[in-house]
Image 1 (cartoon, rainbow, N blue to C red):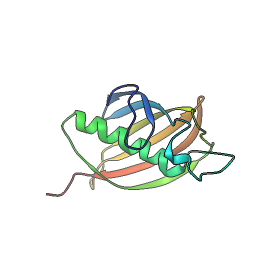
Image 2 (cartoon, rainbow, N blue to C red; image 1 turned 180 degrees about the vertical axis):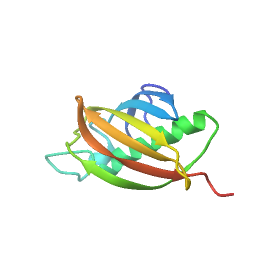
Image 3 (cartoon, helix red, strand yellow; image 1 turned 90 degrees about the horizontal axis):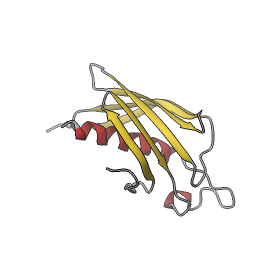
Image 4 (cartoon, rainbow, N blue to C red; image 1 turned 30 degrees about the vertical axis):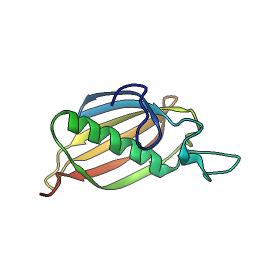
Length: 128
């Protein structure tokens, strides 16, 4: 997925780079994103699930670019620290940690250099 492209989760990737071991990306949620419908009237913020979806898509895309596919199995230790609003640019970093049951990705999402969200995304190889 290239820069400036809108994803299936209705955010715009500004940059998606790095290798699967360390994914670095930046994106923004346009003002007209469906994520803001009803969340919240007169005070829109990006829902937490949208931020987690952003990480999942970035990690999945980098793994695919290296010939691997994975299934996201969960999230742990997620903390939301700052609200992300329409047209805010966020930067994310996700670092792969090998685990016996499948990889885990420790992630941080930054807004203007401050940590807006962090957690651990867990995954496994798809079953045949």
